[in-house]
Image 1 (cartoon, one colour):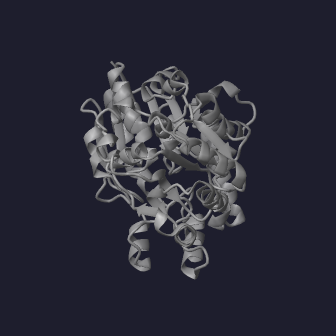
Image 2 (spheres, rainbow, N blue to C red):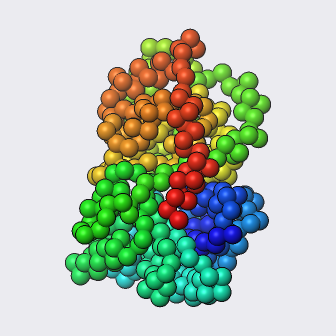
Image 3 (cartoon, one colour):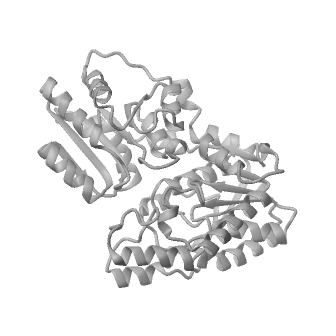
Length: 429
């Protein structure tokens, strides 16, 4: 049986789409003849933006998980700021204008490179060395963010040149949309760029989730074969849907429901969507509900409350299974790509579970991006520009019409099942 080592900070009971990626990969790899070992952080010492205890039940018994200690500043941050939730995505859940937030971003950007979870590396490295030596492991995967995890792989490749090191970057590193908000000093930014380049040069394979990000990463190094860069998207697991029974809760729901699952921060632009909903409702007079499950920024909560009044329903973060139930209870699913630079490569993890739910998807974002292309090729929905009020309203009207014929391309959607994607991953081994 072939052995492989997965080094990841985010692992159950951490929640969020980043956890799903390697939780599912490890499960299917174990079914396909591999023996996965996982090195992750001790959850009692970790700082997760979102937790989902139910995901621990999905860890395969065939996957050997090892937890290590860590040293991080976020626990101190929570005490000083008196915030219950740690910051995520470049402090996008924080108030940008506050002095404390600015100071926090400056400290984070200049004292912790590449990120504030770099204190986990020495513990992860120690356990990884032990496992590689004792188990004679030849395949090592480091997945990020946090991108500091990639430095563990970089050091392991130096010490064990025989390993096949696969660096999985779920998000861009120095091209991430909030990078400039970290207020790096010039010499710190140069160091970070050098670390990124070293990882891209030294890894045997570099994996990411979209064509656009792949091209950006490949363009950072010269003299390297383009064949070392690969796109392996996120996906959906059909087994996650088999025990859902949305019809049990649907009969009493008479309003046309538009559902959104995930985070909506200030960087998202929903002004066109709000106008479109009002325009459609004015014309149709059809009762409706816009239902949010996840994290909705204060800015957008205020906007939706003022514009849609009693027609919104807001839920906080919930378990993965409950989130899937909310997807299937909706009549139309809303997908929003942040209105930021270089957003064409953003392919959110939920797009695949949206597709698997069998519901049509209304996308708001770059119409020439990777997410728009996936919606088109699978027939799952359509992407509209942020301010295309007419187009969005027309799409809502079309979906809300019970006589409207619609058929997704099920064969194309099946290409994004976790099992199929795992088979693509194995080719890199």
